[in-house]
Length: 207
Image 1 (cartoon, rainbow, N blue to C red):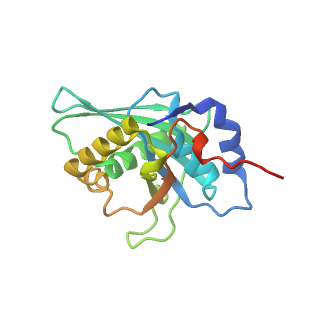
Image 2 (cartoon, helix red, strand yellow):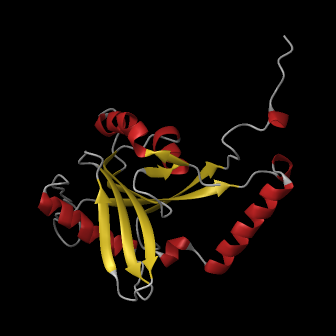
């Protein structure tokens, strides 16, 4: 059910939002977890959250994918900036024995990109540890609103029930990725089958 959209098509909208001084920034670094995929696309739900559901302005947007490798101790990452200094698509390649602590790895990546000049310098003035060269983080975890059974076909319902059964067995992604102690926003996004309103749900105009 994940629909992927080309990031390039939405760069103008993201650029306008990024520069919109009428909106207070939600964080210096706004982070979304994306499913593993090619670096040129992003989950539609993420773009919906940023642009449609309370537009979220940030100094930098981070879209993180996790790829578990067959080698036990792999630790590497790739970054796509799309020619900007505020949009970063990151793929973490981690060995199957490595902890998947996204918040820890991301702080290193932010520092690396500041040192390379790809990310503007950040500053965090208020902290019990004193000033920091890395700004604030906010992680957004998206949860799909499950539609009523009447809106789903039998096959859609079967696939959806299987997906959530697997998720219950696997445990919380928030805890798995080490985000339970991070600044976290859990947001509900609509579940859309096929990207359109079902025909049976549409109103007929009579006047």
